[in-house]
Image (cartoon, rainbow, N blue to C red; front, side, top):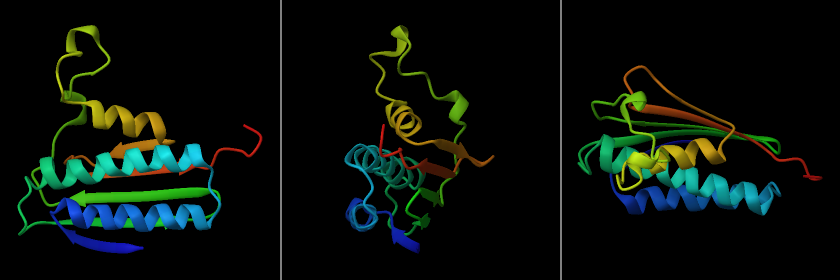
Length: 134
């Protein structure tokens, strides 16, 4: 799947809903689907609100590959980017009251791999399906 959407949360929700349907059609487990839902929602919101600053003249570019065992997603915004290492660790006691960083933490917690490009305007995420016996 390749899609380009405007910087509107409604457009991101449609992409998310479509992918969740595909995961269910491939019989992915409830826990994996829930985690992917949270991670993808955070990545899309970050691209729309933080990357593109909700500027409807800018787009979000989404690439996705799904198989019965693995999901690969790339989300790129048209913003200036950021340095993920500069985002405070939201689990550090001194940062518990700071609202930033939670989305990145959720993405890393639920996905098998999360990486950003050098500019910081593109995130690649992978999820390897949990084994059926887990």
